[in-house]
Amino acid sequence: MPTPQTPADSPDDTPTDSPAADAAGRVVLDARDISRVLTRISHEILERNKGPQDLVLLGIPTRGVGLARRVAARIAATEGVEVPVGALDVTFYRDDLRQQPTRGPQRTQVPPGGIDGRTVVLVDDVLFSGRTVRAALDAMNDLGRPEVVRLAVLVDRGHRQLPIRADHVGKNLPSARTERVMVRLEELDGHDEVRIAGPGEER
Image (cartoon, rainbow, N blue to C red):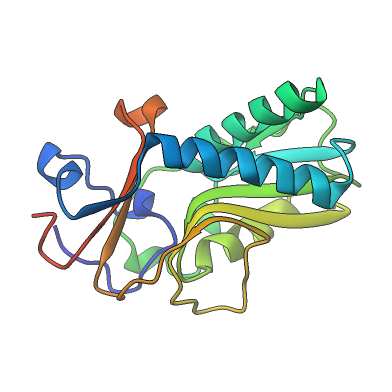
């Protein structure tokens, strides 16, 4: 599989869906680890916001949406309040779209009540260059004006190209730019894990 010219934030931008790719590299988060860090992120979000009031979670497709739903479920279990969850596609807002492998747009779903005046938490699986998050901020301009926007990611692997920082991080994962971080979630892939592979390992 060719390596894109400009790294993206998420493994969704250059998917490796073959069984060989799933088995490549080493596991850095297993299912129990992912469950624990999502629980911690959920509590951090509640603490930072001083409760669930006015919260909206927007997952960035593909795997950010599943993560956002899991965080919302944990908040509901803790607070007894259903936090609205939506999806925010950023495909046509990326400034490096021409350099990325072709991927069809996903569906943007704005929760009832919208995002105006709300605290929006963007949720994604991997933070890398920062370009996906910048695209998400641009996409939100077409939807409304939140009071506050925060960012929660499962993995921050560094190598930022833009001045963007996550507010809530499951795991900081130092990596080489040539390495590949692969996130698998039960909803899409049949199991939960995060792997990191060196160049050529996913082939």
